[in-house]
Picture: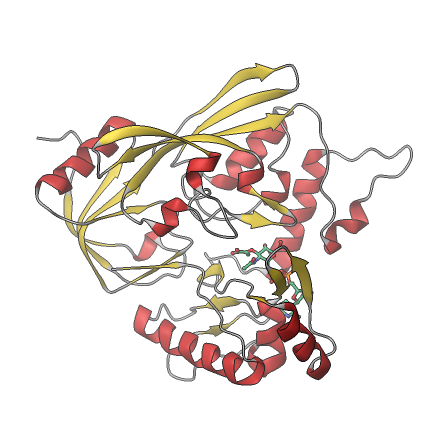
Length: 341
Ligand code: EPU
């Protein structure tokens, strides 16, 4: 007997930003940590797989999802003093990421401003270590609470445990094991803007003209709105591919053939702008004539799904783009969202 309400055969089209039609065998919404554990145990007792769904902004759903889909709607935000320079902010995993960023800024707590307007929930943020404009969530992460389905117990995970990497973490590598209920961030009382990313240079504070966290957030919202389509108007899941990393020798060879190639050094080698690769290969604004699936006309890294096509149609276009990029540049593009079902 569990306190959450289970439903059968629920269509998830409204719960994923690619607007894919997908039917969950079982579905429930949870709004407490206890409900999360109960739903998990219900599935474990029946040997049923589970999928934890947040904002559905980084997933591609198959037409049928076997097992139980748990829709995480655990809310709440609590501030606790940490030391004289910083505050610990603990947030329910089901809260909207962007609303959380704005709330922290309004309370004079800084660090998350560059991550404004990223779609999705707080619980999903550490899973793929969301990042934008020179900041990743790991930079301000303190710890999270999750239900470990294997051990059937609650665990507290610090940054080392999470094994954060570029759009990656232990949670992304072991799907279905950890159900995140709450995430805590350590945020600063002092605003120290990170303006290293090219398009933010215009914001450099000048003498007598102080910059605020809200201003940085507003600027980033404007930048993102120009390039990234609003899922409510044009279904998408943000960047569909990761920016690939190649070794220096391969980068130099590519640079000879493609002198304008956009890239920057990272410890593992050279990271290429996948949006540039796709754009220059001629796919910016591409649409599959049958399914409508294509790449956004303002940012070629964003796959769009205007006709709510299914996962098969999406991966047909994905495979075509990956093959074209492999042929043209000898580079493998890795899909960023998670395939479910
Ligand atoms: N570019 C093109 N054509 C395009 C797209 C990009 O030439 O169609 C060039 C741009 O001119 C720029 C470079 O590629 O010189 C990089 O483009 P952009 O600044 O838009 O960033 P990105 O590398 O394409 C990454 C993240 C975004 C994040 C932005 C800003 C990944 C996979 N994507 O995109 O994250 O918002 O940087 O920091 O790392 C997401 O993960 O869903 C996401 C949107």
